[in-house]
Length: 299
Image (cartoon, rainbow, N blue to C red):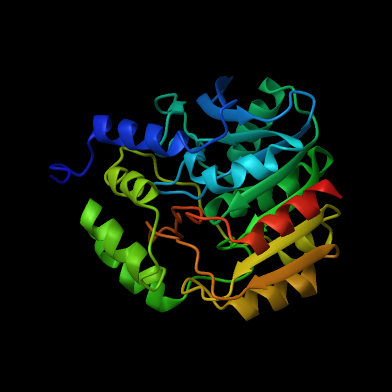
């Protein structure tokens, strides 16, 4: 039987736990207090490993979405994957104290890193999480050693019109069926992990706060970014013009390695008219993607 209401907390928690069961066995949950509320962090990997912070997409994505990459990345790093404050997941925002600006997001992430005792980190984000990660690296450059952006949105180009039009039913009334329909369109009908898909469906109608959105980073700011950047793009993306994003990033970022992954389409659902909050990480880890991430972060 399907979910009877737009949001069912028990169903969401059950789906979350099922995806988290795919994480490494040494995974532990950490709660970090911040001025904006308690941030829920899933951690694994060697305690003395270099800190690697992972940000999920927005909408219905959570830290659980990194399950396909967690084991490989945690071999050499202390992995910290967090649920965004005010978004679906187990982070608990303070009432009337949610992040409203990019400066707020920077302050929130600063507080999380302070709580984790991680003064300098490798940082990565998918989709909307890539947008946050890039803005953070620009505003707190001393804290970011290496930055990887996995199919980031609103960083170098806007959304394709077709993607926004297909997302419109979810914008008007998010339901599990509409979430599934958009994901199936966006990924071209490629089979999705059923547990991951149920988690996305269960997030429909989650009582989340309006996400922080805004313009793309200024060209002069991007040109001054000193961190090494790995930009991985889905060759079959329906969200944006892949080659336009690659060209703009290559022309602006001084230390960027870009690769377009052929025949890969990464899900970005739950787009909003306010600028968009993509939802999920790829439900599987293509071998080429894994090699890129481990090679870049290990160098």
